[in-house]
Length: 159
Image (cartoon, rainbow, N blue to C red; front, side, top):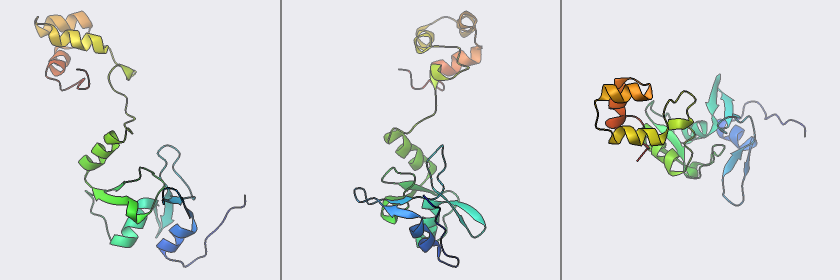
């Protein structure tokens, strides 16, 4: 398929429309230009800067976005720039949205390559009433790691 180039001198919204297609089922305005291969977000070059397409569309429609504000997707489609599907929120809102939609791709616990413990060992450490130094020696970890486990600062996901 031949590459399409948009005309020079058009507005940002016209450029986004040029490289987007409407999904008739979801009503998403899907970006068909460059898409980040790891995260799936559309990228657009505008005013000598590389933007995430959904943020560029939001700025074009609503004005500048403060540094502490994130632009989130109701539709959970990273390549979507439909304004009806976008809303602003904090880092906490963004993280809560990510977890609620099951997009947490960060490994934790024994799935980490450097992990020394299993979830069963963490449960045993929490139940162990011996001195933390002795527990640490048994598992080959430091006393501070045992303390963090017992205070649920680490391995929070283990019940």
